[in-house]
Image (cartoon, rainbow, N blue to C red; front, side, top):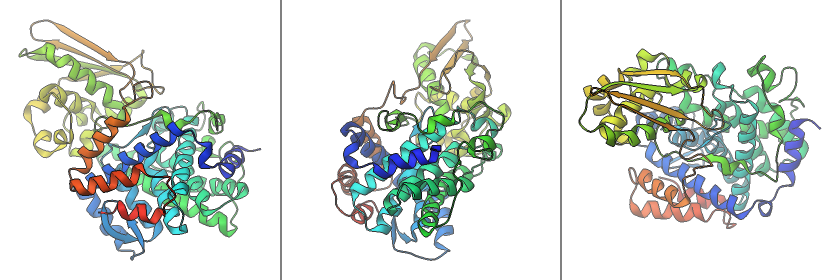
Length: 453
């Protein structure tokens, strides 16, 4: 019984009635968060560029979230992934360090519409996709980022293959094969951190497309390796050579522990590694008053530190809004200067605000020996003031973590905030009703139409 076969056996037998009601309710709210973000993303240049690139390959009949376009199924999945993840405001499974909905939802939606499935099928496939993506990410033991792989792209491809395969009607043999095939497609480099390139925005959509492709090839009779996770040249031995990994995590707790419930919804539109620092800065800010800040010292675990703190000189002055999302010094400085961190703090006036940039230049970073990473994304901020006072605050467990989750009501409020930037109140209510009704056995195509722009 290989790991992929154990996953396949569970997924092949699973029905919606096997999923607890609280998990299904949370799943609908995670989908709601994702769809609201897709609408908000349409305001940004990356959405227009992705739309243009994909439409150049020819039209299709699949609706696209938040847009009037119709594309072939795999291209629609790519664009939906870009729209959900493009602002880096989407959910994250904390131990897996993986944006799970951004790949699982586009794959499940594309497959469901293509197969004429219902929203019951769609909701179950989405949940299974999240579960697989999360477990594959956990198996990396926090190491993917450290070697330059984006686990959303790597783990998300496996989740997408199971989500798509389930709706396509693959049996256990087929689902195991789909995982074996998609292993050769699972990749996503973090080199964008060097220059603020847009490649990370493409990763979950590409993972969704890869999952759809793998499921299609498996259904047609293509073969894939049996030990895609644990084999000599399987996922963990190639992507994380010589590092401590936990391949067994891929199959742990199926049917007992629902990893979807450990998926964090972001309160800030920035890299999840920085959230605790933003909260710490905002907690300390009232104690500063009008006193000048002499220096700011932040402590972070070295693995997430590579993502949001290196090279430090570049992080002091982000080149664009996407660069700023991955800059701990900028986020802390902006939060201290403005008393908040919203999408507004990523606009051009904030990126050129001399007060924010000067303060960001006073931020230094050290390793955090007390960090809970990867179980949680801890943050420690220490501020030295001109009058000699030193203010300190630690957020050991980031807000949004399963120990400190955003409530479903808070997710609905966030949805209204995000979709409200790009759509009318009437559209927002139509989408809200459609998402919170997922599982009612209506055609998935109707749901997709309700979520179009």
